[in-house]
Length: 225
Image 1 (cartoon, rainbow, N blue to C red):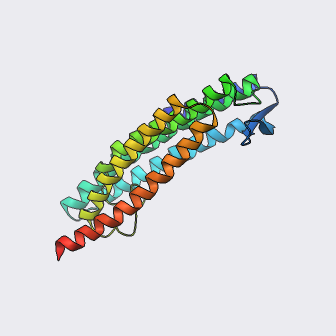
Image 2: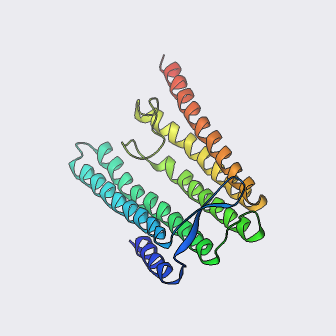
Image 3: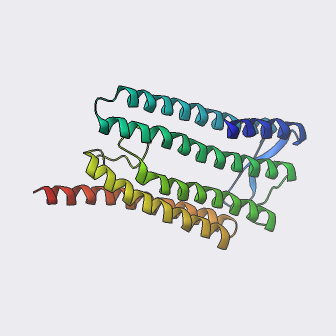
């Protein structure tokens, strides 16, 4: 709720101080290729509100599952996911508020070229924020119990609790170190190279997790036989 309130407050203040038209997208050459309305800053507030509502609904769903649990295992799983859902949404909202601040700063300064020192700073800030999000999610993943919404959900990880637990531990490790790598790329690199590095790291990270989940299931089947 706090992050949602901050997002709305930031948007309200931004609308009063930003010029009517601001750069909202940059091309591969680093130049602003779309000028939009200052009211587009409201997009971030809307997203944060959606995340907040989703987090509340997921938490309530988990709490209902906890009360309706027919055995100790189901109750424990639901209770754990109820707490985790709130943490996940809070982390995502915090990053969105940070991205909103970056967007507002770009609009306020009227930046039209991100290859300069100031633009590179905004790129790095964006990359570091995304890296922080994934580093936090990586720490949370191993604590997630099997559910229909969060975690490394693949055909193989959903087979049973054991494969799920192993997949989340593996996925959490990959996600955490992927997030750290993204943070470092935001610190070391500048401008578009940092954004390109982030995309590459995320692609490698997701491919590794999917492959890893399949391997974990294969190993589990081999152990069972």
